[in-house]
Length: 438
Image (cartoon, rainbow, N blue to C red):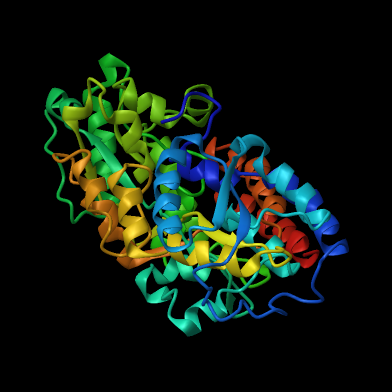
């Protein structure tokens, strides 16, 4: 969720939003919490009188989605004509910095977008209203969304966020490069070994063109989180790091092996030119990336040559899933009205409208057909099918702290200067120390 150099893709961008701000926000939010503990307030009955009068602020970070949002609000106002909604757009680079300030002064927007890495910080400090009441009344049914997304927005057994959209990870394949190299397209029921062998063969055949079979990368969401899960491991378990485990080492080793074999550019090359750029320039045949990447391909010269594949299978099949949720501020002066809007945006009609207008892949099960039709020959269905075996993006109350450790320590494993097991052991120790401070 696609991106020029030094600008993360849409899915990863969501995961990175405000992480730097989150580090300092912990103390600020904790010190100004409007509730004594998370989940201390019921979210109400989920029933709001049709003649309710209120003025709500709905905070988001993507101007491109405003047209679809306003269409949703028009439908909402057919039911609640006297609830006025102001859409407040703050660019993603500043969104969580602004939210931190508002949270510290108890002036959060009535309804606002939340992402996984920042969610626990706000839920844990009593800043968000649970959806308990809406669920009890039937206004919101969590069964309409991926269990992994529901889990992502659940804290201490209570769900606060309603999934708005989602993204999963797959492999984007350039059929033209396969044909040029004289390499057969692999089966979609493929394995790690198939991926490695295919990547190495492509690189050998395309060497004279300066092209590679695949691209490794340092982005957890699109690369090593997925392979750690596929190896049967995890990144975090409660308040402990799982990096110092065989599964985590195997998951990272998948990518270091890809680089060692010559199937991928080096980490230095991928730092200078990102993996998605290698792919869009026709210099990489297989790019593991998010469903959001389709926006970089639609209308491009290479669109007709691209097809999507599911991630290759390790010990198990797995992919990372992430998505934005709508949350209500616990301290909102018009909380009941905000919850009515939250419930409406979570409804099938509103979600279908979001999908049909091309804003996002809506989270509501059965409303994603429009996504697959945007590239009808690319088999985008693989991203929707992946929901069945998806695992939530790894997060904690202060995700930023150990994300920084990953960024600082893992390059020495990817460039081959230090053994994977040595790097992951150090990372686990430092990550445990960071988690102990949450």
